[in-house]
Length: 331
Image 1 (cartoon, helix red, strand yellow):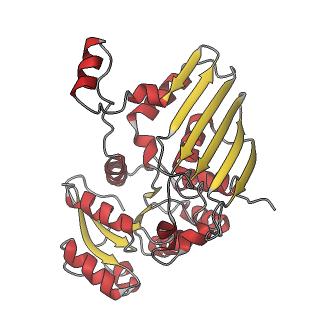
Image 2 (spheres, rainbow, N blue to C red):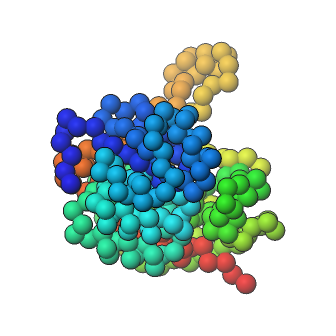
């Protein structure tokens, strides 16, 4: 189904998660998109969500969404264990799909989805908004200009804070299936695949550091890619606060550093601003646009142009398989 460029794409949200609020707000501000309905398993929450976001007809049964001819595309925002099954149902009814990461909690279910998606004629994408970050795009462009056979050493640090309340809220799926690299870190794993290709080897130490968890909240990973690329990655949600993500790529002619491209943190006062000005130093970090909005825009444009979105289901599957391989807990 190709969408004419002058017609608004009509969305339905599946899953009234916390992210549903974000997506509803973004869609409300887009001139070429409209959120016309939503479905969640809890009728009261679904009704409240619809009222808040001006949805006239929320759906209390999934079949109402799938059978609605006015719905062009589904935003799947449920817990990951239901992503693939819902996506397969949506494809059967001819709906375009944009799925929140990860593609599913079960790699086999994700593989089945990718297999069934081939040749569907639909636009099918996975949320991985880091690919729309202009600084990461600059880094990828710079990498392409280097000798492809020269060694590259990559250091990636993701140290976050996620407390017990975060893992327990909702249905509680995070406590069991929200390993740090399958949830928070999977965006960066997708970036590594985007930069360097198909991983050759994954060596990892993953563990849970807190008794209320059943999944690892700390991982230390060494990933080997073709052409002498090694990625050393540490990720955790056990920290006392969230620290800025750090990415540095060392190569034979120097290094590419994300923090340097971003620029300094915002100054804390007038004196610091004045000092930076006197020293002719950058006074503010570069502005990063709303990456989710950019990905939503790309998804709509892909439907209009009858092309794959920038981030495909195959990309999501590769990132999920890498995340799972890096998240196996030792004895």
